[in-house]
Amino acid sequence: MTVEKDEFFMREALVQARLAEQAGEVPVGAVVVKDGAIIGRGFNAPISRHDPSAHAEMMALRDAAQCVGNYRLVGCELFVTLEPCLMCVGAMFHARIARVVFGARDPKTGAAGSVVDLFGGLNPSRPPLDRGGEMPAPSLVKGRDGEGLGGVARLNHHATVTGGVLAEECGRVLSDFFAMRRAQQRNAAGAQAAPSHSTRLQSAPDAGYPEGSSK
Image 1: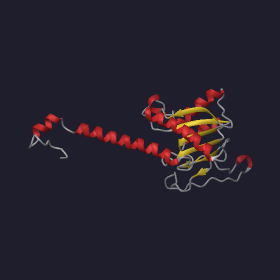
Image 2: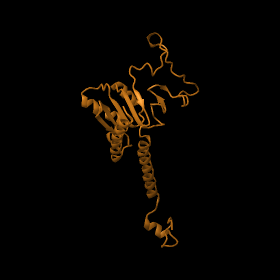
Image 3: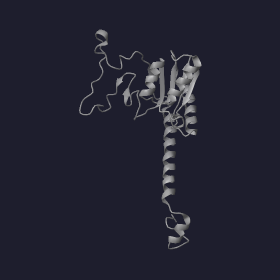
Image 4: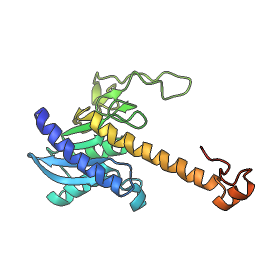
């Protein structure tokens, strides 16, 4: 698929991300594409659905599966605005997604190289996941009955992955959302901590300039 087509479908995923934002969810969106046409759309909805599995990718996979009448989505591509997590990559493999395209990286839960790489192996730039011990890199040398083959390589399905498509735009949607949330939390905390206007006037040395005024 060309860069232009990748960007086109990532922008469709961004539309879904903005729908998540409007619903008060973390703005992540996804679409599933088959033969150049969108067959599934989804956005983050774990809060509203009280469902920890309702990530954008999961919602898009469910929508696509209903569209084609099959839980296997062979030959399909999935576009998502944020690097998928372990759960979502696992679901993509079960659905037989052929290619995954994501926008911004997720340094906390990303399973396409930021924390772990289910598409290839452990990310050597991350510290060992076992305390006090080194975690060996998976071997790709296959022995009898798969003996010696790295854990990721032994998975019965693999997909190709492309990251960083419209990464700046995808990341900005998220950073703006969290900046807005932090501002709302600060304002709410300030409103709770501040005494009422009448109380301030009574305690102020000069009623014309209540305590706490920036003037």
